[in-house]
Image 1 (cartoon, rainbow, N blue to C red):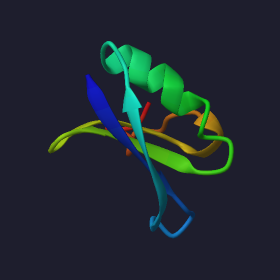
Image 2: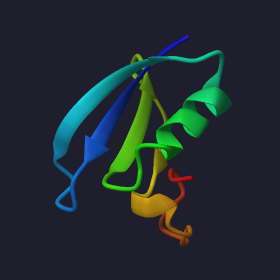
Image 3: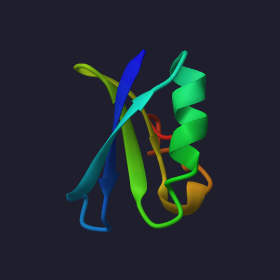
Image 4: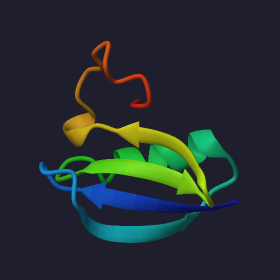
Amino acid sequence: MNYRFYCLDSSERIVSTKDVAARDDLAALLEAEKDCEEFAVEIWQGVRRVARVKLGNAPLEAQDRMSL
C-alpha cells in the first residue's frame, strides 16, 4: 500500500512529505515513528488520515484521539 507522511513543525505547518510503501497501517506507523524525533508526522493513505505520531512519540493525552 502507498502512504504519504507529512512532517509538521511546532506551528502545525508541513515542512516535508515522504512517500512510503508499506504492507499495512501498522507497518506505516512503525516507519513514521522513525521520523518523529524532529517533527510530528501525519500518515495518510490517499484521502484517509491513518494516524498522527506526536513529536518524539510523546505520550498521548485525551485530546490526542487521532494520534498514536
